[in-house]
Length: 223
Length: 136
Ligand SMILES: Nc1nc2c(ncn2[C@@H]2O[C@H](COP(=O)(O)OP(=O)(O)OP(=O)(O)O)[C@@H](O)[C@H]2O)c(=O)[nH]1
Ligand SMILES: [Mg+2]
Ligand SMILES: [Zn+2]
Image 1 (cartoon, rainbow over the protein chains, first blue to last red):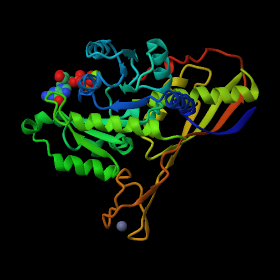
Image 2 (tube, each protein chain N blue to C red):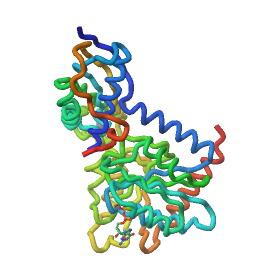
Image 3 (cartoon, chains in turn green, cyan):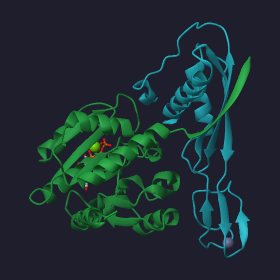
Image 4 (cartoon, rainbow over the protein chains, first blue to last red):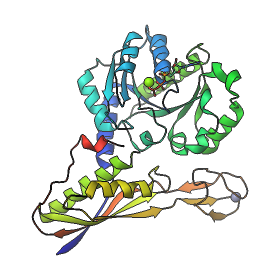
């Protein structure tokens, strides 16, 4: 005997449900949560090291960092002065809301002003997963080429901010900044685009001001 | 390759729904999902992932049917609806270059589950919360 039942539910309903719980929790705690996504090696950890140092005296930051293997990134971030916890995904190519919730439980951070989620290096898979963040940031490093927004459009469509990183390399890699900007804007006209170099510090102030502003807005909006 | 994780989630919730309806002895027969063209999920990869999940279990042979859902793209300058097969990601009219309005295409839904209420368990499907995230 065979039966058919209608379901009509989001496939990622459980993830979305967990993400809403996290978002509510972050709202109550007044914590700004930023999800950083990029291909491997675009400079997420380096950016966070410098961001943590920038805010060290003024704001409390913490980082949950996802990698397929090793605790290297969490060690680097701790050395930079912030509580950091490594989520070793053991194969998964992205963070999901359950991994973030479990990571937070294990990390047991004190309440912080800003929580950064460094996603697993991957431009495709993290796109579909809501982590309860305030916004997603996509990093595009100079050496990757300006065509990446056209080739991996989904994440560029959904990120609120795009950071063009390693700007100190522009002269060496023939990176066409105008084309890169056009490619990003074509997919996402509302995307904030900033260029920076975590190495030289160029553009870091603009990035840090952006997150600080977003934190301020989050805390003044009374819902 | 997050399609594996998505397929596992489909499998888990389809089985849960079927069992809630007809008990533990159900055997999945066919599942229908809706996938939008802007959902960042590849339907072929999803079907492959599905096959690798059900193979060798009592649900071996269960079919995953994907209903492909193109986004609706309308150009207010041309007053026309545009073909969504071409560069669906760009919110730009392929004819006049103006900004177009895009609607839909974000579907990622489990729609229908068809199952048999049949023979006793031969082999347990291998899934758990941690396995959901083991992608290849
Ligand atoms: N020249 C230059 N190199 C940089 C910059 N930022 C990062 N790098 C280098 O790029 C490499 C990768 O940087 P990471 O910060 O580890 O990149 P990631 O995105 O965290 O990498 P995964 O976590 O493995 O995905 C390292 O060798 C960094 O030193 C920069 O602004 N300029
Ligand atoms: Mg890193
Ligand atoms: Zn037009």
